[in-house]
Image (cartoon, rainbow, N blue to C red):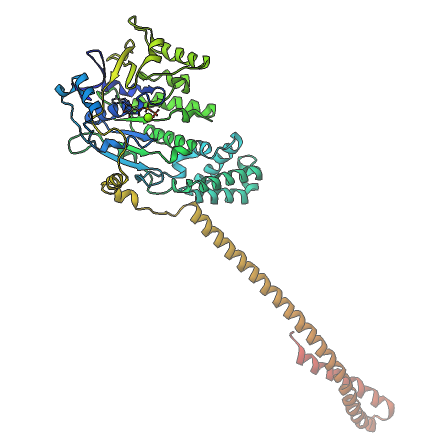
Length: 522
Ligand SMILES: Nc1ncnc2c1ncn2[C@@H]1O[C@H](COP(=O)(O)OP(=O)(O)OP(=O)(O)O)[C@@H](O)[C@H]1O
Ligand SMILES: [Mg+2]
């Protein structure tokens, strides 16, 4: 509950235990065994932040956070709690909160989409469960796309790009290093498998504009952005990779900000242990860096998990505000984890943390918040306040109404498919295919022309032969006639055999001249 500019979370006896809004960007942890009150604690915290004018983003893995858009119900249990905390004197009221639902699949909230290039090769490799080698190749594919100004928006762009690199593998391998056919095939198969699991719907436009999470209602209360993760949690890698992506978006898009009296936004990461399952050392290192640096952007991150031991030390050591619900220990390994969780708190001489940790009831916790100087308080045993909005979930029709009546509905429901790598490469292939077809047609035409010419030559040669033989006999006859006549004439003047001989040669050469003129210039 937002109270005297502080976030009143719990009571230790009569003492109010409050978080200082200016310390919320020092992050936090809400841990505890199942059913011990983590979700209710998260609800109380989110409501208080909203009242303080701070928007929040949280993932709802069970659907029981949706109740924040409806007022709390005046049950007997609630009346008892209100009386126990003296809340009726402090302005507690059952009330609704400004809520915006989001959904990766676009069914139970506005579609929360992104593009392949926005997600980047590192997170995408995790999503596709690629090996280190395949991940390196994916980075090259992204680089080629960048250098050729090809947009990678959806999974069909990515598939087209992988195929393009595979088709021109020799050229790209020479430029960037060897990419085996098997690796490219494996990446392609991983993309197809992601599509089969419904992954193709997450990569689309319009992509999420995280600035839409920063809205406030007319009373100045921050919006509570709820990502419906009931379905996506079935695929833990998908869920955690998207959450990590959203976290990194906040880091990349928000400007650097000095210390402030309250955070810009607080991000709640439920089932946070999933983030570190199958995480490579590189990814773990990156997560650690983001958590460390995001503070300066005015972003607070709260990790919610069953046991703090689920988180790596590099992350755990950065979580300044801690609410630890009961932990149950049945095996020596579990007892060891309780001891470790207890030791992470500043000891309180009034009680033994380890013992108390296993004794806490539902809605109880051990707590340590950062004071105004950023120093963690000694651990305190406390009862968490009840929420002002409804405990549990809402009806599907109420949810549908919330989603469809949102001011952002038009913006996010209006899908578009921009010209990107897939379309460009399809066009390029079509142009190449057309050019190849034209070249083939040209070659065919040339071949045909040559053949025609050869046939004509043959035909002409035959004709020539025929003419020659015909001409030969005509010439002989004609020459004979002419020669004889000439010879006769000459002979009659010159006399005898000599005149006949000259007449024959002259006649033959005269005929060759005529044939030459008829077929000349071929
Ligand atoms: N601070 C509280 N005020 C009122 N009721 C509470 C409080 N904390 C817990 N409860 C009650 O306990 C129930 C279980 O709490 P909650 O759902 O928060 O547990 P959880 O730790 O989130 O469990 P899980 O790990 O299964 O998600 C709630 O439905 C509610 O009835
Ligand atoms: Mg819960």
